[in-house]
Each structure stands twice: as structure tokens, then as C-alpha cells.
Image: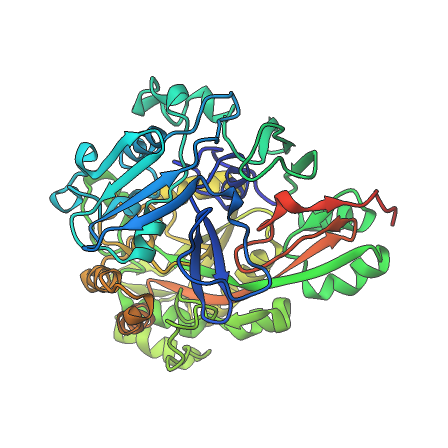
Length: 542
């Protein structure tokens, strides 16, 4: 991995590494399965599924804590029946109370979970604060009832009520203000197929198969070690020598050399779920942090300027130079894989520096004496931040820097260690940055674009557009997923026009796999989608 986990706690973990690992340590109420034909997400309990499965890679429901569920006729409540035989790794039973307890944590403003928007339909949320005593009932250990203040479609109710639980008996005495610093974050007790064996920060993280797991079973491989190696060339060399078994995001240009050096390496491809983007701080982050009020960013606050920046960047040359056939220009954050909602009629902004200059000059940004554009005495000069260890983003940043220099914008590149970078992003300390995003397979983007910046913890640019909020709510009011399409079409048009960020490209991820790994089923859900079912042949020397 190029970056370490931030927290091994599903309430506060925000990085992709964290979610990969917590998914193996902690149990899930339901199992998820993506239908590549329609782009719809399916939900599975032991005895029930939302939709019939349609493909050969159907997910086993046996890892689910829920036996079944019932949606009320008025769509204002959902009742789960939990299995009675699930236990935390310390032997205590997993009960409905663990869910009620953890939802209070997800909704606690002091803890500031990035998943607060999942609670936005629960009773009380419409009045400003969830009434947990009324919103979640636990009449017995295996019955869990969620109540909503309005009708909620079944697929969304399943999505929003399946947040990962924590063991109440271990966490109940931890104060919210001490939650992020609790030692329990370093010693997670879950109920999934793996347990944490060791964690050397910024070096390695080791999981061991959990012998007591019945959700659905202990992981087949006895020990999995995640090595944190920020340098791409070192990761690649270790794949070639057989020192590591999996390396993500191998450059297409390196395929031949890797397989020549080590014929026991396969290249596996998945997509399109991840995109790279350039983030522009739409609001003045420093002013917001000190006052809690939003005002436009002095450089990036004007949508016309953000459109100009997108016109100025040669996205196709980044794809051609690095991703080749494995990159597709992105227009918004609704993936072409989500076929039912994707708007094919939107044409991406082309590489047109003359149009970029026109837009900038109409906005008052004129060439200064040193060739750098300025407005009211302020130079158009900024630092573009990105995380260490991502060769693709480093490559893209250099092209972006050159493109912007050609139209009179001074862009410096700053590289930060991954966890520092993401912490600074969350604290709105960066004016411009390059990062990536893995979309949710259920379209529910309020946590990314919602105007309530205290709840929308992933709205790093501070984009505020009340119509986006309305469209998300209107889409979520439709009882059948496909009926929400008109709202997502308008949503995509607004994002395209406003350019809160510059969407660069969708990535067909290319992962290097040792052939000694058997049974890996990669799909849009992720590289480690079924890692607990993998098996190993004996080691093969390259």
C-alpha cells in the first residue's frame, strides 16, 4: 500500500486503506453485490436479497449479521432480524444494542464522523438532531428497528442502516472528546474473518485469521501483511522479486517488464470506480475555520475561473502519457459504470487554452508585469498539494503545472505524506490539491457535496449549492432507484457547469497479483472484494 490506515475504526476512518482493513476486522449487517449489467447495488441478508442476483460473481450472504428484514408499508421504518450466534472476538455476543450504541457515535458532532449524512432520514434529523430513543428500537437482542421521519425507499434504507457496529461493552465508557485518541483504536475488537495482530505505523499492518469467526468463517489465509511503501519503484521491484504478492496501480507501461522479470505475476483490471481530480477550495478556508462562515476563495471562488482552469488542463495528454487505454476523461462523479444514472449527453470540456484565457480575462485576471495574471494587485499564484508515493498523480501535477504556466498562472507542487495530506484536507488548510476518490456504488453524494459543511465531512472544496441538496433529497424520495434518474441528470449538469473541482479521469485500476493467490475475484467493489476466500499455493520463486 502507498499509505497507512488513519484509524482502524469504522466510525472515524476516512482513508481507503482504513476501509479495506476495517471491512475484514468488523462485521457487516448486510452483504453488498454490484450488478455490472445495470449498475445497481444489491443487498443480501442470510434469508433475503433486495434483487435477484444476475451474475457468476454473486456474493455469499453468509457474512451478514442480518437474517432478514421487513420494510413497513409506509416506508417509514425497517425492521431487521439478526442472527443469534454472532460473537465479538472477545466472546461477547453481537446484539441489536451494539447498533443503537454505534449510531449515537456516528451522529455525535464532537466525534465528527465523516458518515453523519447516513443518519439524515432518522426521526428527529429534520428538526436538527436525531432522537435516538425514538429513531432506533431494540426490543430484544436480535431485533433492530429504524424509524424515519419521512418515507424512505427500501434500497436507501438498507444502505443507510447498515453502518458498521462497534462493541458497546468495550466503548461505552469512552467520552466523545477522547474517542479519536482512545487506545481501543489501536486494539480493535471486531467479529470479522480477521483480527489485528500488529501495527507498526507507516511501516506495516498485520492481520491474522480469526479462528472464532462465523461471519461467515475464519479467513482462509492465516496471515496478511500490508506493507506501507510510499515509493512506486520500490513497490514494483518487490512485486518483481516476489517479496510482495499484490501491488495496486501498476503502470500500463510497466506490465511487460514486470511479467518478464517475474512470469508468476498476473495483471488484473477493475473499474470504473476511482477518479483523480484537482480540488479547488471554493470558499476561503482560513476565514471559514476562524468564523464558521463561507465567503468565496480569492482565487477559486468564481465558477468561471474554475471552468477556465479545467479548459487549461490537457487531461487527455495525462491519460495518453500514463494510463493509455486504462483512463477515461471524467465529467462528473457519476461513473459510466452506473449505467442507469450516467448522462452520456454531457460533453467534457476540451483542452482549450484560448477559451481559458478569455474566461480569466472576463473575470478580471490580466497579465501582470512578470507574466503572472493578477487582479486587484493579487497574483494568481498557489501551491498544488498531493500525497507522496503516487507516481500517477506526481506525473499529472507536472503537466498541470506546465499547462497553467502557459496561461499565466503560477502553480508550485508540494508533496506531503499521505496521512498529513488527508488531515490537512479535512481541516481545509489546502487551497488546491490533487487526489482521488472511490465513489459509493449507491449514489448518495450529500457527504461530498452537501451545503451543510459540518455534516458533509468530505466536502473538502466547500462547494455550496442548495439545488444540489434539493436534487439529492428528491432522488432519495423515489421508491424505485431508476426513477431518480432525471434528478441525477440535472445534478451532473450543475457539477459540469460549476466545476467545484476539475474531474480529470476515471481509472481502470491495474493490479499486480502473484499467481500463488487463488480464487481472487476482483470487481468494481474493490481489489480485496473476497480476500477472506483467497487461498495460497506454495510460494513460487521468480
